[in-house]
Length: 399
Image 1 (tube, rainbow, N blue to C red):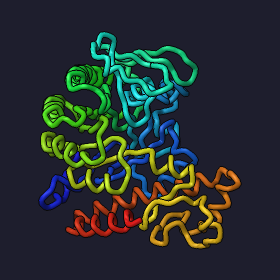
Image 2 (spheres, one colour):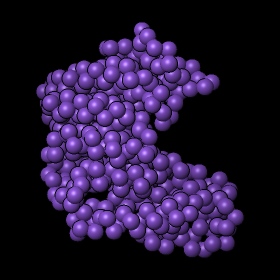
Image 3 (cartoon, rainbow, N blue to C red):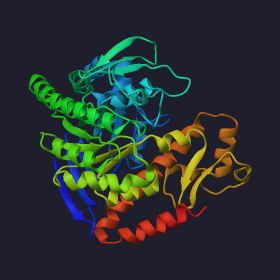
């Protein structure tokens, strides 16, 4: 499934190719997020045109609406959304657990009987929508308040119906606020769930005759504890996973260390996906330390509020300086938006709340991020990665 290419000198970074039933993914690669089987405001055809090699959708959201059975009946996620390339689905664990505790990026779940009051974390002003036990998670839908339950087996069943080329094992997420004792308890639970996911995945693969084989990635947790991260990586490596995801709450300053700990333990012949990372400095750090693919909602999310990326940094199109600026968002960008539309026009669209504003800004931000990681891949091949990193980061963070 994965072929390693050029190794980055003196580091864990490398190029490679992930082979899937719907095409190859040349790595390192940024995988845009289409949460509900769509990258918000952008046609799937436009995502292909801007160079996206694969898209990632969310099992939790698609389970609730329209239902995994409907997507299965449509021929799978790619057919349903008219995307011809490879697809990923995450397990739904992030959304079940983070929404359950009322958090977005910082997460927590404490199961009944966890016994540590400090671990029963809930966001201010929010109600708990999910509880964890050793078998799975019971949660309330954020859509209509109905009650549901995810177990490792249920997550596998949903993801098999969705039919993505690459899917992730169901795992428990914690926050930086959780105690060491709870991190240990959670890690043991995630390992047990991973083992159950492998068994159910193989059962469903044998049962669903005629369907393309889906790859299953295990997810490495362990927060910011080196021994827990390394132990989790070694334990998952012993299972029959096709690749691995690196998840959990991580302080930005510790990202390189944590990714390096994990990737030093994982088998080099299998791909590694870093979940939820998309800022330029984080991408360079992750590539350098051995991650192959990445997903993040940030490029599309910030675009919808008029914030865009350029080689000179991130800025807001809504500011007065853009009103009479007839140049592109970024003169170095080759995207459709920069080739045809000015900052002044985009400023006007955002000020008048025109829907196309989100479309044009998202096309640019996604192309910027996809192209940046593509350049990292080329730079590893030609030996110029260090120069590219120094140049891009100096310019992007010069403000």
